[in-house]
Amino acid sequence: MPKSKYFRVVVEGATCDGRDVTRQQIQEMAESYSPQLYGARCNLEHLKSLSPDSTFRMYGDVEAAKAEEIADGPLKGKLALYALIDATDEMVELNKKRQKVYSSVEINPSFADTGKAYLMGLAFTDSPASLGTEMLQFCANSPVNPLATRKSNPACLFSEAMETVIEFEADAPAAEAGNKFFSTIKTLLTKGQRQFSAEASEIRDAVELVAKSQADTLDKIESFSQQQRKFADSTELSKVRDDLAALTAKLEKQDGNFNQRPTAPGGNGIDHANLADC
Image (cartoon, rainbow, N blue to C red; front, side):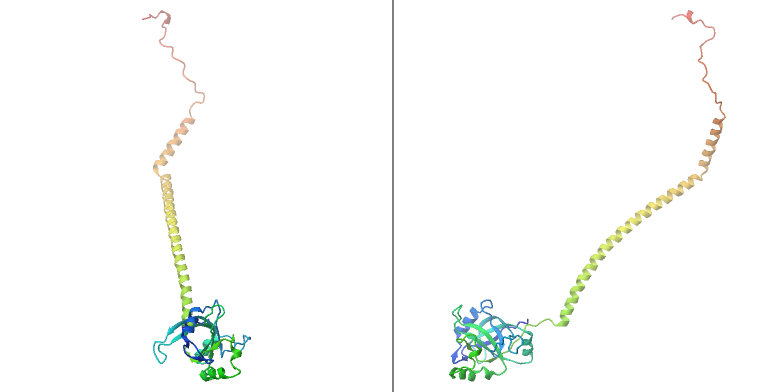
């Protein structure tokens, strides 16, 4: 839900049910307020319907509160309570249309869990008279308080309604949000494309390297084949073939019954027994 900036909701001294909102109470509300302890809700006219579809349903939550002295103007020097709300879209629309521009807080002077003043709720109204000084004084003096049924606790009091200017934290325009989304997706896709391109480039380089290597190999094989064909057609090879054929034919004409020559006995007619032993 849209969150507001801090805006002033009550100032010390404002009359409420015949009682004053004191400086101490404002300080205590600022110090003790915690949504985890008790969350003050935003409503219209201090009316709290049980139906979520009612006009008087809740319009947001008080997220934080702080106390600051007013620096200038007729209320200079007075302590004021400022609230930060987490508003519903309906509350934002009302604010844009300048509806319910007066605020009034519900204060418990002595909250059970802290014993200090506590912020119980924040109401918005169109008519300051409905929660203004005269109305609250009338309630204080009347035997039957017409606002009593709107209180979360009989001891609670309502502050005088005061004009409120609520500024909400600026949300990114739809077009800007769309552009941001588109930019994010584009960045992711571009990053992926760059990564894919880098990987594809590496693959292409590897394929080119393999292709070049294979081309060199094929060139060498082709060169060897050409040399082989050239050698096969050379005159030297033809002469070798012719010489081999002639030798083969000559060998085929040799006697097939070839025997080894007998051993030579030495000189003819020599008496080996009478040879001198020198």
